[in-house]
Amino acid sequence: MKLLVVDNMLSGLGDGAVFDYVRTFMEDGDEVVIRTSDGSTDVRAYLHDAEEFDVVVASGGDGTIASIAYLLADTGIPLLPFPAGTANLLSLNLEAPSEIHALVSMTRSFQTLDFDLGEIEFSDGSRQGFTIMAGAGYDAKIMEDAEPGKKLLGPMAYFTSAVANALPQFAEFELTIDGNAVRSSGVGVLVVNFSRMQFDISVVHENKPRDGKFDIVVLRTKDAFGLIPALFAAILDRSGDFPNRAGAFEVFRGSEVTVVSDPPLGIQYDGEAVGFQTPFRARLLPEAARYVVSEECVKTYA
Image (cartoon, rainbow, N blue to C red; front, side):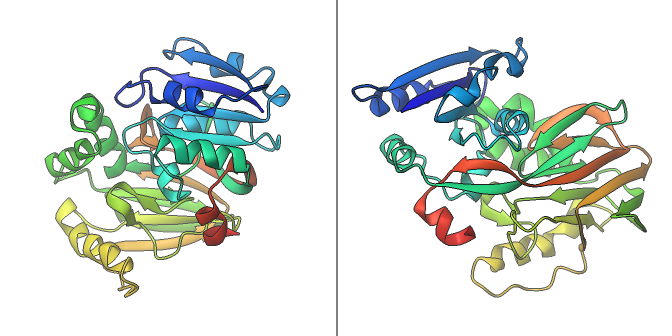
């Protein structure tokens, strides 16, 4: 096999686990090209010949993987997300193993499945891809404030940031979903492709990243404490009880959404606080990303 490994050295703990993966993977006749980045080089430069490889291995956090998935969208080039970030939510949602030998075995098995991909357009016209979810407001503030503590605290940095921001900015929202106008209010808006997030909590009841639609969730509270009932409901989802979250969440579905808020709110995609504020537009690219996946993933989604 021929593997192209794109490694973001600044992601997660920077422990170099992807190099253990490469050493374990290599057999007679294999070819592996490793291209490392510290963020100063445009990722496009690493993918100019991606079609010449069997698999592109994206080693980094969810933001790194989203950038590579977006550049490979609709090419049919298989992408293996290597979990080298802080939360690694895409790997969680894809039910991928984290152990090196299991990842090597999954690569050799070479099962692929196509998933929806999100595209977010900012106020200056620039665009970026996202695999899991994008949003504005409370979630973006959590991502921004968690950044300094991620290397030290890991996923707990998000929890610490959430507690520290118990009184987020309340805003009025104007949403345009597939051409239909909706007004709402709250502390944030999430545009969801994959629904499982930190601590294996699911934002909505069903995880449908191959159905051509986003779940668009308005966090309808005035403070973070109002989200606690929805948090418990999300935890109970894992037991199959599926309790109602209507008091805190307002959920819509659509393949394209424009979000305007008063006042403007910060934006994040796949855990990356981007420095832009609302408005933004998100559209869904149906089954545009092809991932190398586990047998468990195929059973869940195929």
